[in-house]
Image 1 (cartoon, one colour):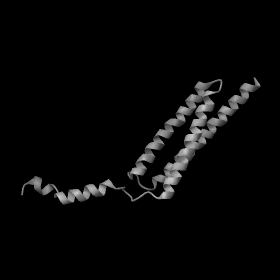
Image 2 (cartoon, rainbow, N blue to C red):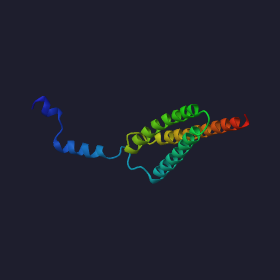
Image 3 (cartoon, rainbow, N blue to C red):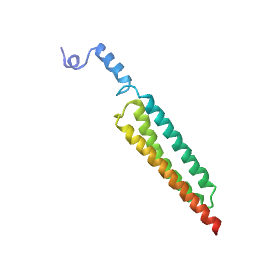
Image 4 (cartoon, rainbow, N blue to C red):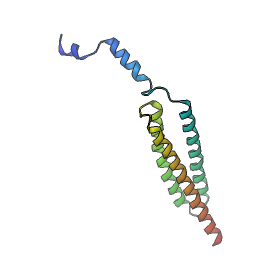
Amino acid sequence: MDYYQRSCPDPETLDAISSASEGLLFGEIRQRDKVICIVLTLITLAMLLACLIFGLTQPKPMLNLFFTLTIATFCVSELILIFWYRRGELDPKFRYLICYNAICIIFMCICCLMFIAKETEQTKLN
């Protein structure tokens, strides 16, 4: 037997490996995790859109737009993490990090909206 024949597994083993790798790494994602992910995603998207819409209607839209785009860049990394988690490429303990990041993004959106509201109030007083 030459080196190539000894180092390559037989076709049955290759089929077993490929069928096992097609599934999720840590089993199925629980329904509760899917619901939490969808709810946090919808809340985050609504808050981000509110920041964008209210920010563009103010007297200094560039500062507000910059603030909103900064939050949107955090959302991109969050979406990548969610994508990897849903494919099973991340350890299940990363779901806590994903939820934590989503909550932080929501708080950043609240700060952005408070900043815009304060800016609007100051504009009305002047």
